[in-house]
Image (cartoon, rainbow, N blue to C red; front, side, top):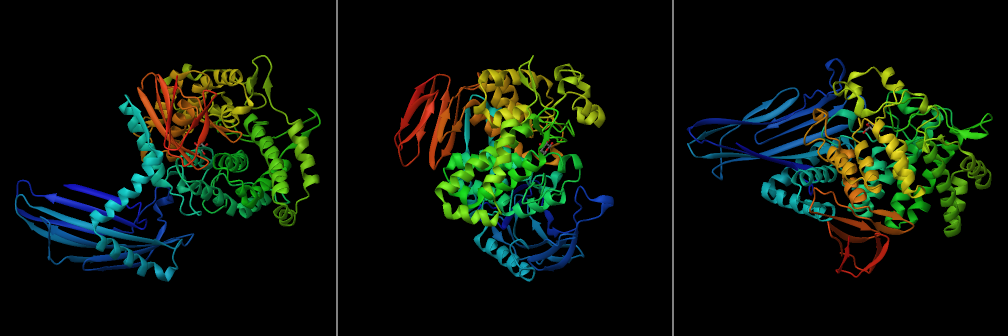
Length: 634
Ligand code: BGC
């Protein structure tokens, strides 16, 4: 038996299967049953309750149609299929058995095969949904799509699919010489990222499991801005990331409504921690009310997009509205402590979800003040460069710039950041040193992962850190810290970190390279890149870690490659793990495409840009002419 199946990257509403059976040592009859099954039970259904109503079933000779509807949200999906069969490449004429049940439609085809012959069935599917079609148009369009694929044929569909993929690989591939396991790991990840999100539809986003599993319900998290945005920014045309930003822009009214429900006002926006349509859909208070750092990631993504693409129009047109909403939220959420004579942020959960309801999470405070500062600079930019738009914003946002920014400035100047003088380390939150200070390496291996062995109260009382938290801030705002400062904090926090979120090792890998601990970086890299292939957390049945796959890509390009974008400039500071002979990646910066090849002895920059480009390699200014290359010794 040989089977091949794909959902087309080129014809995005089509999928196809080619199924072949060869009679190796017998002659006899065999049957194929080709069907659409609407009787699906979702993994998180309660008491076996199914999520789908079946609205239409129809089977006929040579094809079938099934239409279903989600029970609560009335989301409709139409699936039409057509198929053809052959024996040794010759079309067969046998009459199928047509089967139509209440939730299942199909055809059964029986072949008389002689020894050595191959029977083949090609199934073509067209899928439509109420996201794109009126309810009464689902069927006709799905049937048309299935016919279109049927006439195009399996090979042509596949060739078009391959072509589309080849374009993606040109821009996003990473080649590693001398380490097959690492090469396979990164390609597996790049494949999945591109398969999950193409950036063609601003209503769509990237779920932590993509389409590979039902955990997290396909919804959007801060993962998108914190992890996926850097990947798409560097490997895809700017429009792809722009769509991710527009997704949040369109959800701004919902984020304002969300904040209002929690008692905030005057246009303060709190984006949901988890969403499908802009509304919060997580069900744990410590995450929905407290894990507010997501607002910071959403604001930072705007800055990240602009510094990589140079598309400053985005700021005036869309970004600024999101920034003002977010800054208004921080301004209301932060309070003044008379005791400290400082601003404080109480009752939050940082990225490290093994702490709840803490005061002054350093990362959240840091991101909040960064947002306020960036919003003020952005308002100034719009005022100077697009006064008409600024006037429009004053009315639309009921903006009283002078009055509002007065408080923002005061917060920036007087925010409290927990710091331990003795250790010279930023404290994850107030009171972190009250905890018994234990190291992850000393944990009994049978107790790990602790989230599967310990009670929540024990986890919350411990000092163990689920994922980068203070270090997440040092990664995002790296230019504010000296290498020594990063090293001190890394050496303090990493040994206390259990990396029980897949989003954790990549950030540590990047910082480890930064502080010259390449072996540690490599160890962390392997942990992230082969997480799903080797299934070492025994959880692949829940789906793949799609968003952390972007983190794996970051650990090569930003970690080993040392790629940074500050002050409108591109920097590279490449290192190479001793396990690798050479690696190469391709990035796009302000519309210019560059290939970077790193070996033990040299760094080669190959330009695919149309104009002369300049960048810094090991702090040295390098100029590369179009289609030329430059080699720098290491
Ligand atoms: C992590 C979050 C993340 C979520 C989805 C959780 O385990 O702690 O930071 O957003 O998974 O990936």
